[in-house]
Length: 138
Image (cartoon, rainbow, N blue to C red):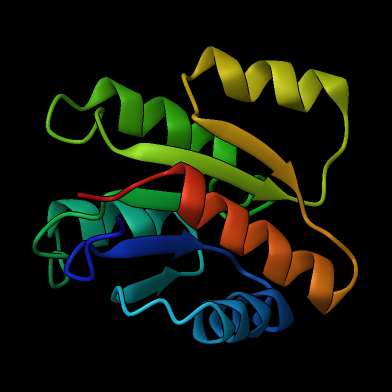
C-alpha cells in the first residue's frame, strides 16, 4: 500500500507535462506530497538542501524526464547515484524519448523503470496508476 506521507519528486521542465502528472495524481487519488523541480540542479538542491529547503522526509520516488535544461537527466542520475545519501531513492524515467540507447543508458544508472510518456491523458493516467501500484512507497 502506498504510504501517503512519502514525498514524490517530479523532475520535469514542461509546464503541460507537470499539470498532466498533477491531474493524474488527483484522478488516482494520490495523497503523497508532490514536489516539482524544473531542472536537475533544482532537484539536487531540494534533495540536499544546498541553498533551498530540503524535502523532508526524502522522496521515496523520483519521476525523471531525461530532456532537461542546464543538466540532462543523465547528468542528474550520475550525480544522484554518486551520492551515498541519495543513491537508494527509486527512480522512474518518464520521458518522451523512445530511443533504445537512452533506455540502455538509463538502466546503467539502476533506474527502476523507463516509461515513454503517453500521448493521451487516459493513457498517461493509466501509466501513473500502474507506477503507483507497482512501486509501493512505504
